Image (cartoon, rainbow over all chains, first blue to last red; front, side):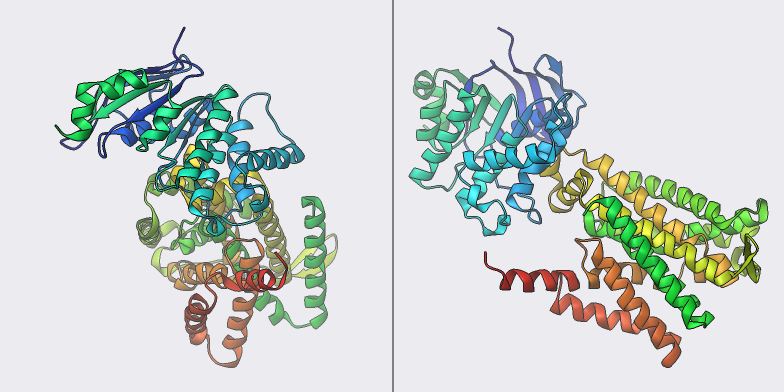
Length: 244
Length: 318
């Protein structure tokens, strides 16, 4: 089976600091992968390199059989890669519904043969809001939302682009037990609809429940990649997390 | 309301304005009205980049002056009717806007504003040293007394007024059309968060270039008839501080998120300045702008439109 996302020998430096050092990473279509690692291990940098916000010095990212080198972030989004941000970044001067309208207009419309009528657009926004449980907030502004609703909006906006791959960057940090379950259920529903999901998370309970496979980053290197139960028993992973 | 309906209504309003102005039987109305209309175009143009995209341009005067000076240059080179000059002035300023955008749009906030200010100074220096368009001495353009259209004599200032009125309708219609199109949503995401915009598939650089080119083009178009209006153009009047300040202050006072904001701001502030020029002195103009701007920033940071929206939201059930 060919991989949906294939990262090979990817490195990124910030001045003298090596943030990512020769990362190899592949994901099959439909997979649910957890990406974990201590703070500052390079998880977000990796996401930024994959999604095109940062440019890696060496190595390549291939998505859906195409090399991503030199493509800007919006072009990658249009090809089917979507991400949510660690800290929600809503468009604060647009209503909740209009926040979702943006990826529909700019990503779904830009793909061939997917022109939506104004009515279809409204319906699609409503559907997505219903899916994340924000239907009654459609006409509100992001400033009226709670923290968990903000994260749901962030995920809904990423989903609106109808991605093949969704990268959820710490979408549960700071949430309560039941809120984490809400978001997890949402991501699993999405995966069942055929979207490949990479989950970056610190909450181990969520990662273990969600992931079919886990990769571990420590100081810019991938130290483990495999089945969740094997990975957490890996002595090197234990050392990185518990500092033996 | 559909765009075509809006344009028809705007044309009707413009026709009424023209008719009433003619009814007053005083040419001064046209002289003063021309300036107010000019400011509506400038404020609307500034708002396309400044209000919709959130990029503050301090160089409006430079785009205005570019339009005016392309008219001066063409007037000497190859005289042609003013509508043509407006078109060419718009193209010249639009291209310069595109170039400026390409060079400076990686800068954000205050840095972008400083870059536009610097561009205005560079352009002014170039014009001062370009003898063909009069250099620092300035250039005269003698406008005819009347314009003959099909045997009908129209005073030239009324002709200029009518042209500016048409340009105003065009600028406001374009601004409103942008606001309701996907371009408008794209611009709003740039104003709010460019990184998130890219992640949603918005080609931010391309959109910003569209905004700088459009904004520059309308400013240039509004400057193109100016030499005919004023009769004598010199760099310090074409690059005047009042254009840069007014084109920022008017949308701010009216409200930057909607097409009607710059319109309200320009009509209010422009008329106030014209009245002050006649009743007090012409020097008091910028003082009025300054005081009003400070007052609005404190009392109503979202302008008159923002004030009305808040009022409405507070009253209506949610």
